[in-house]
Image 1: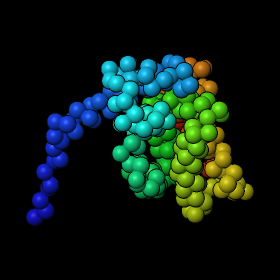
Image 2 (image 1 turned 90 degrees about the horizontal axis):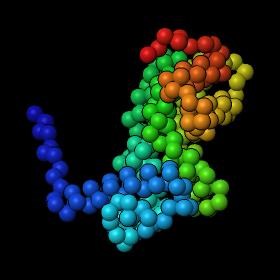
Image 3 (image 1 turned 180 degrees about the vertical axis):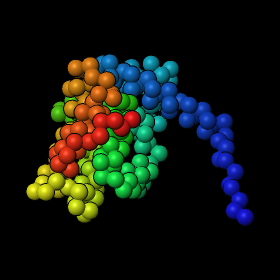
Image 4 (image 1 turned 120 degrees about the vertical axis):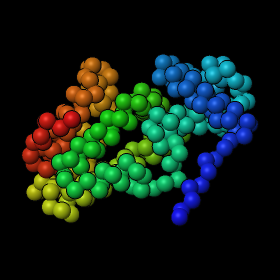
Length: 221
């Protein structure tokens, strides 16, 4: 009989450290979105979190480290950074879906979940990347990871013969990256007031038409 290992118990210091980290991430996420990356100092976010600036430097190393942690928490991959992106549970579940249209729908839904939580911080990172080389590298890493997933998605469609005839995988990946990009979400949801469900249905229709050459079933939940 397989024995289930007992849950890991944190000592008091570890619990306090984790709680402090979560408090800094929450305070910094709010400040970055409201004030912008450049306008938010380590001292300001330390005050907002109720800790000393040295605590922030010790826990995160730099302001970039704080933003990286904020993005990881919002995206939901903070504990998965050492796991290759295609081996993470969400990507594995999407790529394992046998129906191509439903596979696209699952990718859209997963993207909507992430952007619903992280779009504000992604806007901050994208804007800061234009003037800060360190943030440019952070943004490029995020964009590269999402393109890995989209290339795998398009590759799965191509291998099974579901990709629209005449559409090159590179062009299909680029199209998916635009439709599912944080810039598109920001333009339609943040600035135009679309509901997340409206965006998801629109994105699914665009991907089904462009990648599969047909319209999806709009009755999907």
